[in-house]
Length: 191
Image (cartoon, rainbow, N blue to C red; front, side):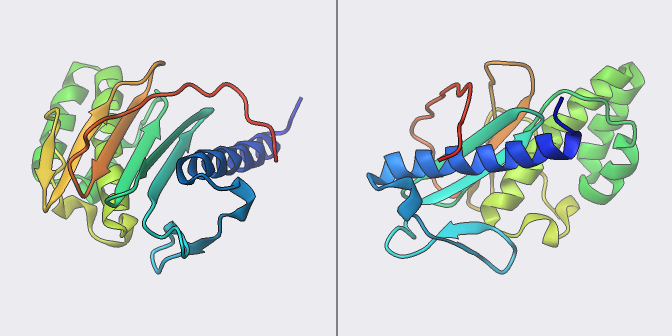
């Protein structure tokens, strides 16, 4: 049996292999020829001549979510269902007052409702901040991401995504999203 840290490392490497393959196919180049840079907030980008291709990835457990765009910045987040016992405390640092109220109401229903509400808001918040390219370097509680099917905030679109398996995912984009393609990847071997 693989040790937990070995599993985490394997998932990290597998997600990067999948990302290279997806970007290579999109740009019609060999995946190994792609060169990456890290911006001032730690977000990876492609270097010249492919800097016009925007991408983002997120993983949680064995789930991987990758988004690409040839026209605008993009951000994604995915979370597998799990218990979040510190959800109310975390929300004080990250959620707006209205988002905290939604979480408190969900907590009054049940812990499961609390966890679901927290992860729905969290994925939308993180996707938005990743799309902006700032991550959690900016006060996240200053940005209300809402729960409507489509929210427009500061020139960005934020939406939750339906997943083929259970979990929570969100997509944020600096331009309208015309279509979303879903693929299910079962196994990635190293290249």
